Figure 1 (cartoon, rainbow, N blue to C red):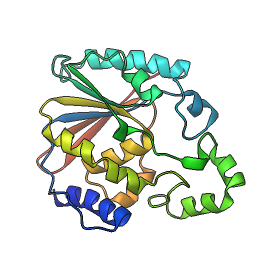
Figure 2 (figure 1 turned 180 degrees about the vertical axis):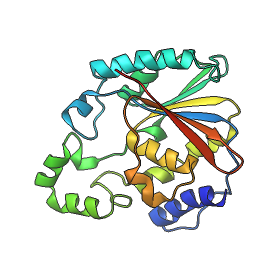
Figure 3 (figure 1 turned 60 degrees about the vertical axis):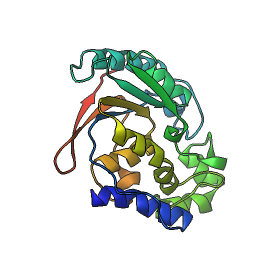
Figure 4 (figure 1 turned 135 degrees about the horizontal axis):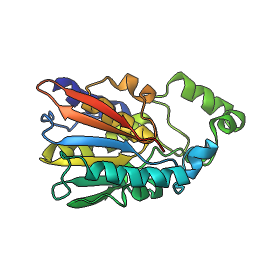
Length: 224
């Protein structure tokens, strides 16, 4: 409990240099399923940022995901909440899931990479060598020019977490790698320093189950 609250307090203090306004968080009573969007066109070409559509593999994953959720007895569609970001690839991944309530969150959008939008990391290294070096030295706090840092994401996820704490039924969260790294670290009570290095692969459903102390997880890889 303390560490979960501290996870977000640390982000607020570090990012805004002010006293945190967050109260201590309550234990999770819902059953979140974090899901990274299906493969996108940008993923194929190794590009960051953008709002690209799904690739053929990504579209196939969207079909498999809806079938997987339909067959999960713990995810009855008349109780299921589906949350996505407002980006094309997340919305398309979640489009065929039957649910009781569907919500799009701007707070779940991928990290904003500013002037590096549409570049590969190799192109970033070539065009912005100083920025590339700064990012390599501190991925948690590095902020892209005209963009965001992981600490910024942690801060903007406060509203999502507040709402998630209120949920009683299952929630499928279809979002992006950086955002899901932050949420995953929150669920499993991990320190912020680990966030940029957490594995959130494509085409994988992560089942998070609240326990008396913390959460347990299980992963389901879809073959596309």
